[in-house]
Amino acid sequence: MFAELRAFSGRQWRTAATISAAAFLLMGIVGETLPGASWGRAVPVEWWNYVTLVLSPVLIGLIAATLVTERPPERSQSSGAKAGAGIGAFVGTVAMACPACSPIAIPLFGTAGLLSFLAPERGLIALLSVLLLAITLALRLNNARTCEIQTADIVSNRR
Image (cartoon, rainbow, N blue to C red; front, side, top):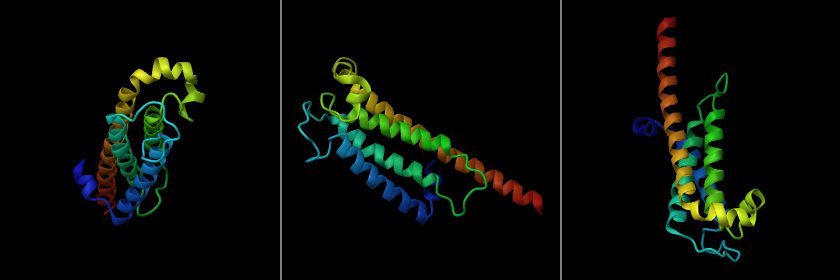
């Protein structure tokens, strides 16, 4: 996995950095975790909020970088990675947000649902979203190595 990361091009690292910064700001503001981003948060920020806020954007950026190629592929097979990254980011953001005043979670679950169901399990849900992102990244990096081997085999068979 680390060999694939070391093989990233400059374009991939720039994409990862840009997407990570954007995801950090978006998740921090919507999740009301960044200082100054709270509009009257009723529930205090906990330790796992910061873990989710630091790890999720980095993983999202790296996943996005795996979708960057030197030339466009003939047929895109990256919808699974996009879905995994999107679901992980959304779940992490909803779980990080204040359960009593979240602009995202209240329409989805209602106030009673948030306070009775989601509030006690928010930390676990947020950490599971980080795990989902890590699994998605591992699968993308593994796929990159598999595609590289298949491409090399095709080129050698043409000669």
